[in-house]
Image 1 (tube, helix red, strand yellow):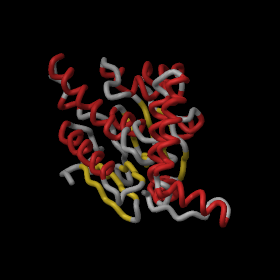
Image 2 (cartoon, rainbow, N blue to C red):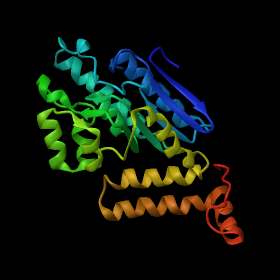
Image 3 (cartoon, helix red, strand yellow):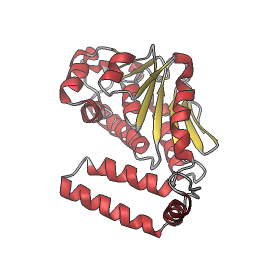
Image 4 (cartoon, one colour):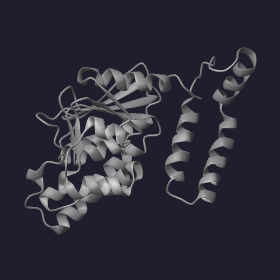
Amino acid sequence: MGEFVRLEAADGIGTIRLDRPPVNALNDQVRDELAAVAEAAADSPEIRAVILYGGETVFAAGADINDMVEADYPAMADRSARQQATLTHVAAIPKPVVAAITGYALGGGLELALAADFRVAGESARVGQPEILLGVIPGAGGTQRLPRLVGPARAKDIVFTGRMVKAAEALAMGLVDRVVPDASVYQAALDLVKRYATGPALALRAAKHAIDHGLDVDLATGLEIERIQFAALFATEDQRTGMRTFLEKGPGQATFSGR
């Protein structure tokens, strides 16, 4: 859809492809194009699951420092708000989203991966938040999504040191969900989301909404979010199909329409 970010769709799966050589640096244009394709993926009824992919050699090596080195406070106050808004668009895609990480996912690149539901990494992948080495901190979700995923102590270690984390360590701490050979990263991500492309789209959307929003509130409010989403699914065709098929044929036999 854009010069550096495009949305490709096949068999119910949409791939958001970053393509800004050499390292997919995230400048303002990439940010704007990413927001646009995230919205398109969210709105498309043909897309039931999404892969974030930077190509065979690198996911995204962070923000374009050339755009920021001379920036002042007013400029960055505005820019950081738009950066956060873009990744919030990605995180809010109401469908399962997996980041397929090759090479480096650093700074804004890792923040983009953190906006996904799952992360698959190549064996030689490196992830990190190196902003502290530039005299700043992560500004597009790194100080918030990272500790929610790996806990505050591990997040502080990564943010305070700015170090690059190898794939095996990232897997051990839960920062990524699967590590595969470098050449198999996209296929592994595809295999992971295939099951969702034929699943009950509205139930998956409700589950994602309940989990993501429930984490931000107290337990009683989270349970109410869950109750509302659960009850609403009894107005869907997929609920009737799923339950009737279960009674007639057993579990796992239903063919869902997404309605």
